[in-house]
Image 1: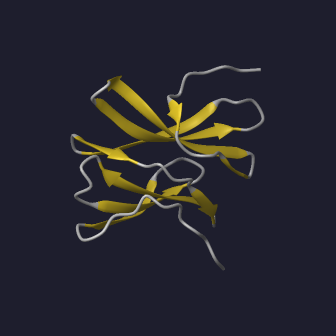
Image 2: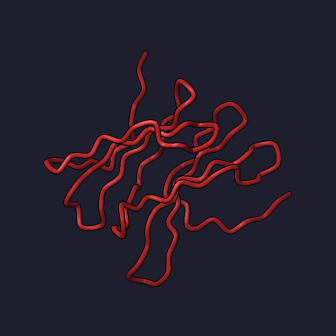
Length: 116
């Protein structure tokens, strides 16, 4: 069994293709924290990649479960003052950004839903 420190889990794990995706909070202090999407190998618990939710120096928050489909991971986030919201898509294998939709008009912290 492997043990690791990856922050405070904020989402339920989503399992797909021998990978587990979890959103957690990382902190420097009580007043400074941001969210991280981590991909784990389900066969041994090792961390495959991390995606830190920050825009420039702005911390971003996500309290919803990610969704996985078509080889990608989808999640929503907002800046820490709720000035904007984002819907992001990362490659499920390596965590590279596929696309990001940012709105200054609305924000959501809901889990994305995938439909075929």
